[in-house]
Image (tube, rainbow over all chains, first blue to last red; front, side, top):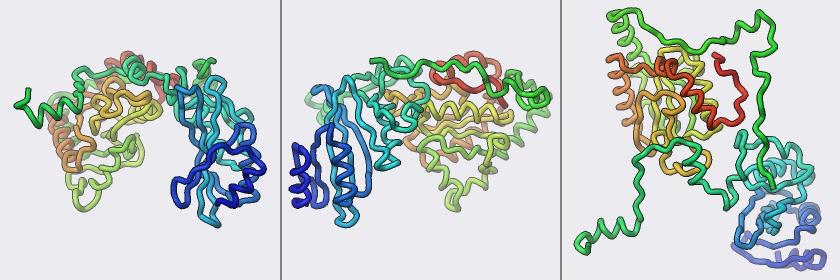
Length: 176
Length: 211
């Protein structure tokens, strides 16, 4: 893996490299270089399989982190490529020409996070939410409690306990 | 940045623009109240209905996994006259198996309307009662009884097969007592149920009456 990394570093600008497990590595790449990096990994270094494409919302840093997880079946190594993109104009180049099933991941991200992938087939068709009108629900600024109370009909009588207080009262009632 | 699409206004429903002879395949009438055939005939019919409960095999949530052991030799629901049926039109009991999302409730409503009266609904699990552990989710319906009438709730997360059998026994008692009038309740409060359904199902693209 270190050989591959040395070769990659000569061509691409890679920021972080860390090893999570014996067969699991992560690198952070630049947004502009991502498609060429994935093509290079797929065609030259046999990372032939795209396992998943997922997003994390870092609202404090005002960015989304996309993780492209690829797998090499010859060496049984998984390599995750992380890309940070701007949260306001969330847009990323599509990779459906490399792996066809990426279009499903991209449709999901478009609907649940609002990240656009221009040119991806069927990107505007719905994924799981039918007729959603609010901001995408997986964004951290979406208030699910408020939305649920407004939309659904909450049944009265629900109680919540602070777990720490509740267990303290239950286990040591003499202290109160 | 504007998210989401504008609500699609459906102008052409599925039964629009059909030929006159095909139009009869769709019913344009809202559901009607069933008055019954008289006290003693209904009593006999209720006894018969209670002893042949045919359930709709539509796993709507995670609770559907508890229905499989019911069918096997260990719990054996067939000895109580309960049998699964493949289509809504042949069944009399609809089991809501746990949480229902907005996408699922659309299918639930459609299946429920396709069932023949008299029809009964059993809702499994705490998610159907008040949303359960997903009550604050963006996509989990909190109370099923605001969208379709529910006869029996079985509490638990998930209820064991024994609890489901106990629920069926409670439903039988209710049917024999003549209290399981869900279909009539739905017909009487039809506009209220439709308004609740349309409040959460945003892309309403089905006819109001389509069974």
